[in-house]
Structure formats: C-alpha cells, structure tokens
Amino acid sequence: MPLVMRSLPLLALFFSPSLAAAQPEPSPADVVGTYADMALAVYEDSVTTAEALKTAVDAMVAAPSPDTLGAARAAWTAARVPYQQSEVFRFGNPIVDDWEGRVNAWPLDEGLIDYVAEGTPSAEDNDLAQLNVIANPVLDLSGETLDATTITPDTIRTLHEAGGIEANVASGYHAIEFLLWGQDLNGTGPGAGNRPFTDFVTGEGCTGGNCERRAQYLVAATELLVEDLQEMVGNWGPDGEARKAVTADPQAGLHAMLTGMGSLSYGEQAGERMKLGLMLNDPEEEHDCFSDQTHLSHYYDGLGIRNVYLGRYTRIGGTEVSGPSLSELVAKSELAVDEALRADLDATMAALTGLRGKAERGMAYDQMLAPGNAEGAAAIQAGVDGLVKQTKSIERAVAVLGLNQIAVEGSDSLDNPDAVFQ
Image 1: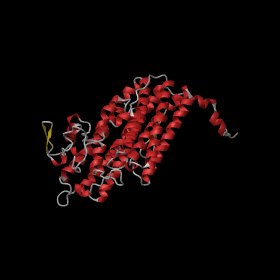
Image 2: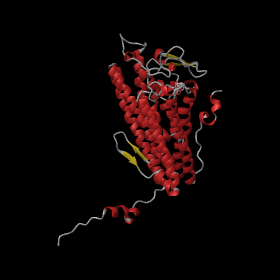
Image 3: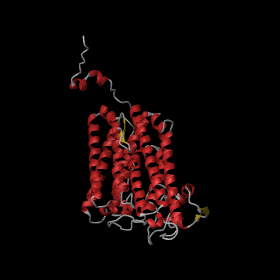
Image 4: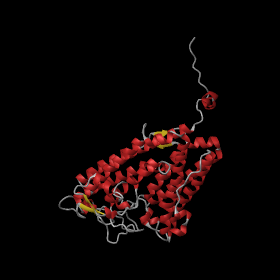
C-alpha cells in the first residue's frame, strides 16, 4: 500500500502545543549572550568598513583627484554606519567607555592637526590649539619635545588628548573627517567643508602647504583607526574581557544593557548632541561638523538603541544577528511595559527618520540650528522629545526586571537649562 503523506493544516502548525513548547522563554543569560554577539558583529563590521576607508585613503593619497577624494569621503560615510550603532555599548561597559575617546572624540581643536582659518575658536586654556602638527616636524608638548619628522600611528597616539585636554583630538573618525573635508566655514548657511584635493598633491600644485605630511597624517590616522577597532573586536570575542564582564553575571549584564540604552538616549544624544546645539544655535555643537552628516549619526545612534532592545542587528551585507531579547524578557514580566517601550523606540526612529529625510532633501543639520529656523528646530526637537520619552520607558523596564536603578547620564541642556548660558 503506497505511503500517504499528510500535512498539518497551516493553523495547526502555528498553534501546535509541541512547537510552542520547543521555544522556551529566554533567560537573562540568553539575552546577554545575544547582546555580546551583537557587539562582536557591529565591531567586526566597523573594522571591515574602516579597512575599506583605509583602502580609499591610500588610493587618494597615491593619486589625488576630485574622484579619489570623493571616494574616500564616501568610504568614511559608510564606515560610520556600523560604528554609530555600536555607541549603545558605551556607558554600561567600562571597557568600551574607556576606549571610545580614541575613536570618536569630539569636538576637536582642529588647529592641533592642520591649518585653520584665522579666528577659529578653541577650548579655553588650550595652548596646543594651534600646534599644527602637519606643519611642524618637531613639536613642543608643554616642555617636552616630540620628533614628528615622520607622522606614524605612534605619533598620533602621543598627541591624542595632549596636555590632558580632551579637545586635543588627534585620532579617530573626526580627525579623519577633518582631513577629508576641512573646516566647515559656512556657519548655519548651506555647505559642508570643502578641502581641495590639491591639499594632498605632492610637489607642484600642493595647496595648504606640507601636502606630503598631510597625506602621512591621514594614512596613519586611518591605520590607527583600524587597529583600535580590531582591539574592540577582540574584547567581544569568545574569550574577550568585555564579553566576560557581561556574561559572568547575567543580571549585571542586563543592567549594563539598559544603562547603555538610557544614557545614550538621554544625556548623550538628546542632551549633549541635540538639545545643547539647538539652545545655542551653534553649528560647532554638531557631531559631524566637517562633513555635515550629523543627521546620519543621530539616526544610527537611535537605531543602535532599538537594536539592543529587540535583540537584532543587520550586518553590512544584509545578514542578521539576532536572538533572545530584552523585549521578550520585559514582556514576560509585564507586557504593557514592553509594548510601551517598543512604541517609544519606534516613535523615536520615526522622528530621526524625518530629521534624516529633511537633511537629505537639502536642509543640512547645521542649517536646522540657525536662529529663526522653526522648521529645522522642530525636526531636532522631535528627536529630542522621542529620546527623552523612551528613557522613561527604559527606566520602567529596569524596574519590572527587578534590577538596581540605572545611573542615566545627564545634560545641563535637559536638567538645568539656565546653566548652559552662564
């Protein structure tokens, strides 16, 4: 007698008790494991895109032209996509926080690195704000002599935060951004930095002086960026210290996850990166101030926060890293809190998508900061409002999980606005 294959009705497949039992509720250890896997993936993608940036920079300095400079700028923009989604791993993870300043510190006194326009403002009491490493092969660092005849990654490491001043940013994405775009001297008017490709032409045709040393600095800075990102990949690998720190105690790992989400949402992004610049109408408070791509940084920061809560990250190339999530864990404790937080995260992303769209249609972020630009101010404020609201939901999630209260980073722009103008 022939064998007859029978298939279950579709509804039976969806509602089969045996299938439901095969998918147990996630444990804190499961959720923290997903978090560590996502961190590893996002830093691996950051390395991959930084290596592509290094390739584009090498090609540009070998044959400077409008096309090769444009390709290097495009590679920088692409490199920011995964990195900005990694910022949610700060705050709750000291290993990341202690390292982060080497790759993403801002704002910077760009005169430390290269020529700047006359009257360029600098941090108060920064004697090195006009050091101009590119123009000077021998440097006086507060009484100590540094031989910078050849600019190497080690030279840049020594210069970074020289004199203990955070504005002396010598390494990372924003130092590279400055070298690729140059200063944005347009204020709140249209236009980004417009460094000419001839600033990298050696011999006849060099503009800005010291073109060979400028190329040296740019190549060394991109090499150093790749090295620094590789270090963080190691920290989240199978035997990495950052992974061990969050997985050894899953409850502490959950606390780290929510601390990162809350602090990036509130004090860092809503406050220091968005509200402060809006209050001061100051394009110098713009995160990506040379390239005018702050709208992308804000968007991908917000996306990174939502990624961690939902337990999924879409890698460069389209594959997804996903697993048991905070959302599932919170829903198990109190469904309404999970639903509210997911709704708040979606609302924030809608606001940041709107801000991004406005910039991509022609109103750059620094133009949104202009006094009297009500439309631009409303787009920024919508993002601020969404981030502040989701922080309150994040704090409620902490409570329903029975964790100790998280210490959310603050900002005078949100907590004490009068102090901003003192």
